[in-house]
Image (cartoon, rainbow, N blue to C red):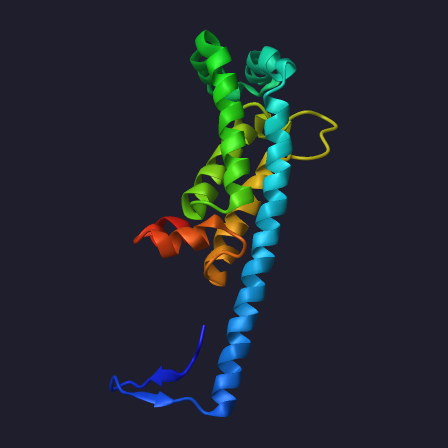
Length: 195
């Protein structure tokens, strides 16, 4: 990108001086490095989601899916019984379908993170999906169980998605992302791509 002139308040352009041109190039260089750094974090997070998705496609996960949903109701405090019973009754008749849908959703999140596609809805959906995983099969980290040592991984995923949304929006055109190419090809894609 060439920086030749700067817009004046009255709408006129003036040539940039050498010092201003140098500062503008430095700023662009910083933004590009920042966008690439955010892209690396996004890609690394996508690799983690890809591993998680691979596990979800395994027969053992599919066989145990309903048990993972119904198990929390057995040890949950009375205040949460109706929450877990709701999910158990909703999922039980179609457990295989929900198991496959979970695997497909994690695969889609992983692919979108790795490729950097539709980052705005990706970060929002990913955060909500991770929150649901934390709230149902991970049982809010089972904070009520004596000897519990952490709150589970999915709640951390929620915060990573939120951080990616905030940091990616500050960085501009996402580094190492397909969105960057799509923005030049499809008018209006920027609204979908940029958080």
